[in-house]
Image (tube, rainbow, N blue to C red):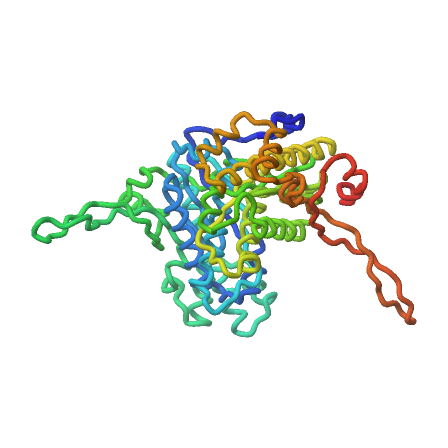
Length: 515
């Protein structure tokens, strides 16, 4: 919106990787630090049925939300989503597809937590990362899904033996040693002889994972003049725990994928993750999707809802605590940009995992903090955020990027302030748009002053300049031996609303350099 001198940072440094056409796209979502998460929330071992059903519910919501997903397969804390080969979802832009999918999945996970764990409080925000892999034909898609189901069987068989040994009194190290070098047959014998468990009788969801797809079902659409039901075939999202390695399932569900052959060995080699260039500052910009609708549903104040902005700032501050490599953040309205220092090795600089984990984590933090900021407002729609990456070889370009975003903040807020004042005065939204069409910054200031007696420069600084987050060094007293008091340094996350011109960086030289 703001036609400013800083916009070159978008033209020259932002880029989008488009996934190749005529390829099936698989987005695989994985839980981040889920060993710790499952321990904190006392998940049952080796499988927690409620936790798996929650994952399945999230996958079901994904297929209901995104029609281009034709199949999903999940096990433990991961889920793979297959997009049809001709999809034009977000014009096949990898960053958009990854961040939106993982953000929506996270949002549903948090929203539905209470449905599956009514007696367990969510003690920390869950979040996920994701990667996108392209497969050129149906054969490799079938092989990919077969590979994931083989992995499910191997891992579950091992984990079943491991946790039965631990529950019988062995230490975790002893259980690992007992299973070292064993084959599938050995594990089956161990379970049968020591614990009277027949592995094949274990629940199919544990052994085979979960497949989510659209099943053709007969649905009553209306009744005739005699009250007899008239039925039509409809596609309904279904969760099943079945074998997808053999041909039987695919032969009976040819509307999902056509038949193909199998070759498991090379599917892991297809699609190498894109690495962001070394010695570059990385900026991850997160934007809320369909936020106009979200803000209307939750009755946010216009043009700015101060509480909603403080919720964004709180989520961003916690992001900085979660990701120590973030040295600065800038946000306004429904977006936030996070600057990772140039030496970061987060996820070995793999773009897909950085984008997806940041998008997921921010979504999770936003949702878990919601009640703190809106105690009287129920969260009635899942928020979701998309993300994109920008690489800056020089610190000067990072500062120019942040100046560009602040210029956008000023232009957008000035316009919105005028627009909503006109609407509140009785103008229709169309009339307000027409009045503001072609106006300059000076014109808008005069409109506010003459028509509404408002001095724009007296509006809250958070609205006009946005919000910055950064680490600030503070000193605190510390008790020392012998009764002598000294001081010690620590770094706290600070939220500020300031002009991001040269003066700010001169005043805070350590923000970007103290990595």
